[in-house]
Length: 367
Image 1 (cartoon, one colour):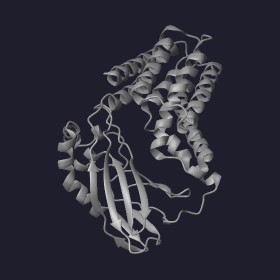
Image 2 (cartoon, one colour):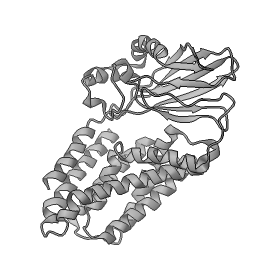
Image 3 (cartoon, one colour):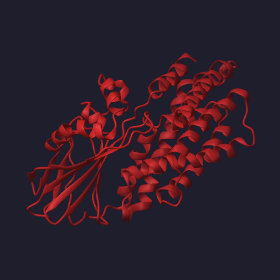
Image 4 (cartoon, rainbow, N blue to C red):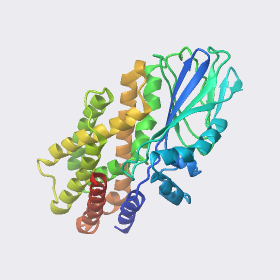
């Protein structure tokens, strides 16, 4: 019991004041004589000098106080503070054209508005490089400490899409478009993107899945719930990614928190699965799918390989969820699941902690 309670409490401690690090999204456009890059980023983290490589929460750094102070700045003040950092970034990011470095210049910065302080504010930094040969292949070097960059080449059906970590560089980017990847290659490329959204970044989805796990030690109830949840979020993930169904995050995120509270509270008061539980889980799964779709929209889907990318992302999500269940089973279910004291000593206290975390998130996201 102690191990699982400490694990869940650890999740709460890390997420209660969650300042989740979002990847930088880079949109590259190559025109006659120039390359333009629009970076959608967490400007405060770069101004504060935070090392974003492998970082999940800015609260865990020694620069968190500086970061939090920057988050409270009005947009115009943030823009003023960003000016020297923008110039530094333009020098640090190396763009090569035909093997020769071309200087990047800052052409604009659009600070984001102050919103929910628990979520990163998105700002846009615009860079431009003059090209002597607009047909020469490009390579982008992303500096150490800058975290994850999702780089997308716009304006082409077969434009480059890649995920670049700090200290790495892109593959060769052809201004006229890339050689199309096979469907299987795209499918495999998006599996880790979906997995990463569950482990380690999807704390709310992790707690929801744990809530399903702690209902009963029997395999049947767990399979019914996981099947209902998977079927539901698969549908809305596809509809959301296609843009057919869109619901603002201000609505989806609080309801996701409420879903965590519901499954955890029912675990406390019911030792078995009622007939309505899979239906309720299905309903909540529809909303979780829209949450997944919003993440996938940040990374973008290749226009010519939409279906393989969507399937790969969904498989990654499923693998992440199954990993959470397997870890919970190995931690407590395997050793204590058949004990008479398992429910009162482990399942109920763990569910109570999960419910408290979900309730905190609900209030935080509504207010």
